[in-house]
Amino acid sequence: MLRQVTISVVVGTFLIGMYYVVAASYVPPEQQNVLASKLEQYRTGLSFDVLMSLDEAERTALIHGMPSDTVRLLMQEARLHPSFLVETVDDIRQQTKSDARFAKLAQLTALKGYEASGTAILVQSADKAFLRLENMNITPGIDQRVFLTKDGSASSGVDLGSLKATRGSHNYDATGVDTEMYNVVIVYSRSVDEYYAHARFLKSD
Image 1 (cartoon, rainbow, N blue to C red):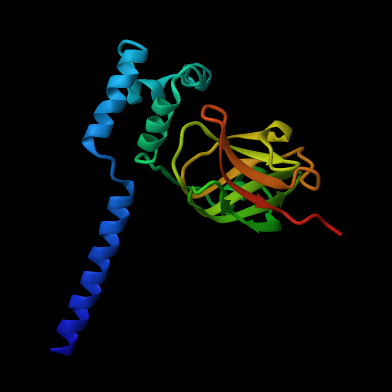
Image 2 (image 1 turned 90 degrees about the vertical axis):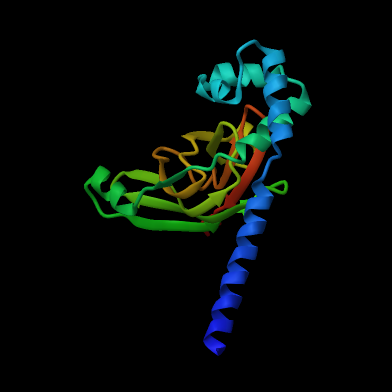
């Protein structure tokens, strides 16, 4: 009897938790229809999927010309499209044909009410350097990119490329970047001018 009660409590707790996860990411059909209508009005034949299929430069130009309420709806829709990728430290070792050493670690922190977690790691291997984002989870967005910056501003940063996924672990080549000077990691989108997360590496004494 006690076991049945315990199982019922565990299952009930799980279902409640799943309800809040689904509810937090749920977008009413009416809102999706509003977005579809606004995109069609902005440009005939334009939809969220079509917009995402364009190259980043063209997509950015289109988004910059959109009304703010349309951009807001786009960002809400983007939250419904998480992605997952796992790259390992062994991938770095295989690429460099050498051992890999963790040089610095910092926690990834969310910005502006977004969600973000995980660890940013500077990895040295042979004559190459990598930024590794490990066990990370970040709010999905549009054209999110990874930067190493001087002060947390993308304008002062070195662009390491597109965020490979919103969940998982992945490596970014940072060879040639002075990580003593560029010691702040940011995830940023030029398309919507939004900062999603950052991590600051301590400078060496």
